[in-house]
Length: 248
Image (tube, rainbow, N blue to C red; front, top):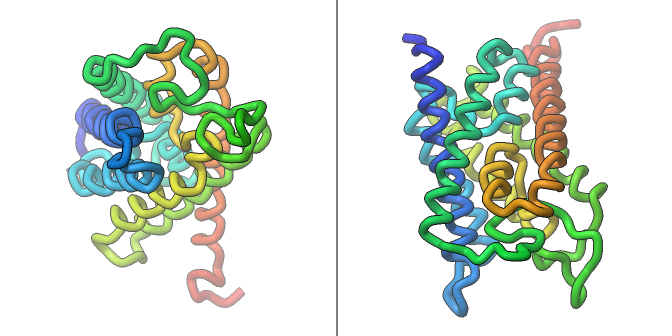
């Protein structure tokens, strides 16, 4: 039975809470612990696991988007009605902000004069300090940040659309999607601290302010652009006659 929009929006808020609390929580609370911290790999796995677990928990309720870029990518790909997208997006942002608020209360970070990347925020560095950017990588500049966020979100949507296609093996979509998000983080944490999700970026930025808010626009525009590209690309491929085994 198709559930009411309110029910599905609440599920999205809960799911996005878990994504931000689990993924960003791993970064804030566990990543930098001396000698025993989980590092890039642990944070990447944390984000992937939040999506994997929540996809099994609420996938049958809301589709488990947890991400405005996923919602709008699904709209572009013909999988989700545009009129319901605003409710999903608002729910995702609210769920993320609540998770960030809980993390803030637990971690009690000193955000006075907070720089790029503080409190697991997303951003980009314009220069290198001691040979590295704010996230320990070598990449600098807005253009590189925009490109990687766009490309990785496009691939993410392509994988989501393919894994949830009715012709794909049943029951394995959450695994493919969760592992894809893990790989995305392994690639891009050293570049932007990995967003591919405007709700995740917004949730942490509102508690930091400063540069995190000034750079937040990119983590809405690039992921949404990438999501739309990925959704359309999969739709075109899936509807191609050659892909359906039909003669031209």
